[in-house]
Image (cartoon, rainbow, N blue to C red):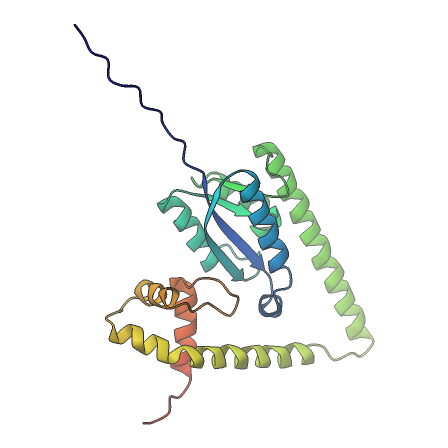
Length: 232
């Protein structure tokens, strides 16, 4: 007489998501301009689909760059869990058709909240529109700068002042974290990943309010290395 194994019901686990939020300037990152709207859209989507948001990566970087540390960290996290990358809008990844296409072939699932049911063809079309919009904005900006220069306007003065102010703020923030970094080293943390984990465990966040990763820790420690430390 044969005995059938008892029936066991497989419980479906909720899909895990890693949020990627991006703004193009440090001023936007410091003020939260654009970030809160992205965070709200992403959080609302994950709740609606019954998923779990396991991490968030905030990056202040131009979308033109391919090797963005924050995006690379978010993609690596998605591969290791595994999880789905979630973004508020497709242009938060890039306004470049080739780049978006390479991500689709990169082995990491991603979903844009503004087009959650878009297939590959639709994503290509949306990326093409975003790329066209980027080119149009760039052309209008160049034309406006040339017109201002022709009128005798001196360009770049305010930008240089803002750059100095932002760097000063970044250095001050790094100095504030110097004791926490020393504590991490004293506790045996030797790698950027270990120091990042220590800062996160102690409740420290980056200037943008996100968790530390090796890339952001490296930049913060580079600012500390450039700053003369007081002699005790």
